[in-house]
Amino acid sequence: MTELRYDVMVLDGMRRNRADRLPDGSPIVSSPLACTLILGESDAVLVDPPLTREQVQRIGDWIEGQGRRLIHIYATHGHGDH
Image 1 (cartoon, rainbow, N blue to C red):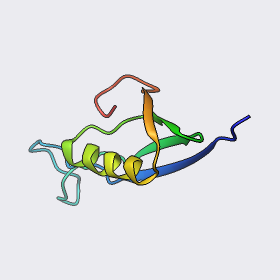
Image 2: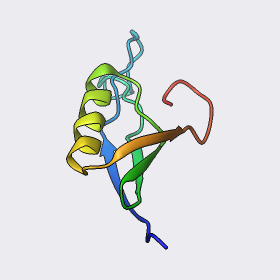
Image 3: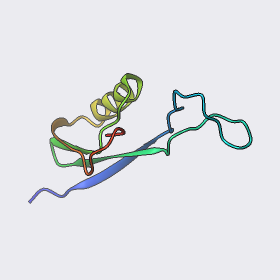
Image 4: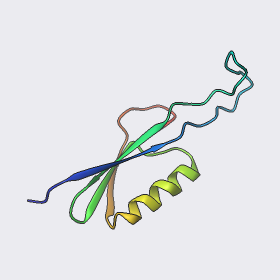
């Protein structure tokens, strides 16, 4: 039986594209995003994929660096950051 392991990449929150500001005048930024990679012997599963092209590139490079084939992507909840 293949043992599974996991790794997590936390991506910075994204600046909201809106005129609203926080009370101190700083821009509104979303919460950080945690993407989890579950790794088997030769395959991997990504849980909660990123949203932006830059984030997708970082995650893709990260997965490639693990030497695994991505076989599934799971989004644990449905809203704009997944």
